[in-house]
Amino acid sequence: MGAAKATRRLELILAGSHVARKRKEATQLLKLAGWTFALHLLNRLEHSVVVPDLVAWSAAQNRLAKQLAWRQAVALLGEVQQRRLQVDAVLTAVTINACRDRWQQACAILANATRRNLSSQVACSSSILACGMATEWRQALAVLSEAKRCLNVTTYSCAVSAMEKAAQWQKALQLLRQAEGQQVMPDLVLYSSVISATEAAGGRWQHALQLLEDARHWRIQANLVMLSAAISALEKGSEWQRALRLLATVGRPDLVACNAAISACKQGSAWELALRLGERCETLCLTRCGGVEFTGQKTSPARKSQ
Image (cartoon, rainbow, N blue to C red; front, side, top):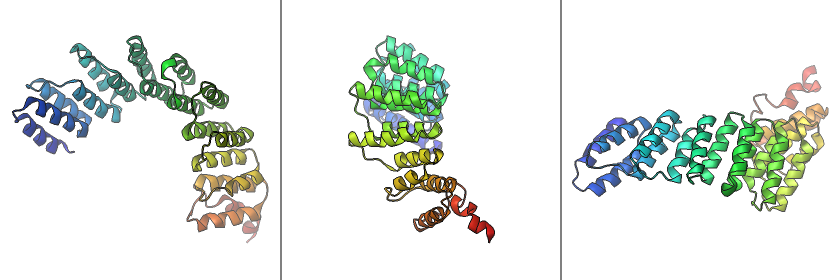
């Protein structure tokens, strides 16, 4: 919603006579407004008979979080506390989410929330994500270890993602086993993250294949992300035959999977297979692979001699 339209809507709301209805409609408007207008709207409400409640403050905080306006979000949390409103776990989690590119601030808010018994799975997951974005994997593990009451598959997935970004594939694998040992049911996202970590670590293909097998044990249907990561791990390990066999199980491979398999064939000097695979990718309407037009075709000795 544009600022001009939102302003007209606000004036209509404030012109009403029913206070409870005006508060409800203003809160709905907060959910649609940009973050700068959301702050303006809160200020207008503060100077009217429609004093914003915690729901309204939380709605404004959501708008700040979407735009990563962390300074304003932290300030807003302070204002809520100054007004002696009862800060809840939802507002706390949203504030931490606004700080997801400021890991120290996110962890500080979480620590304070934990002392006040306001931590939640969402808050812990957001803090771990913030640590992961800054490749602060040790801090991510520290948050996870302190979040005993908030452990679920989402918090573990966020922690594994942090390990992946920091090239800590062994830690990622340990977290998966830890989750399974604590009766946390793993899901597609968790297994995909761990397989991606093994691939990013230079192609730990044996672990990638074992993880695919383990996922089947949990009745997790491998998706394109998981299979592509495993194929990339095989490519990095120069296991072109295994890469092709795994690619054959993919109904409609993506650019990553095709390019990895073609590159694996290239490393194994399987030029004809690489060319045929390139043609298959073309048939599947994949006209480019990873920015290089079918690696196998581009570097084939037969093509070079022409």
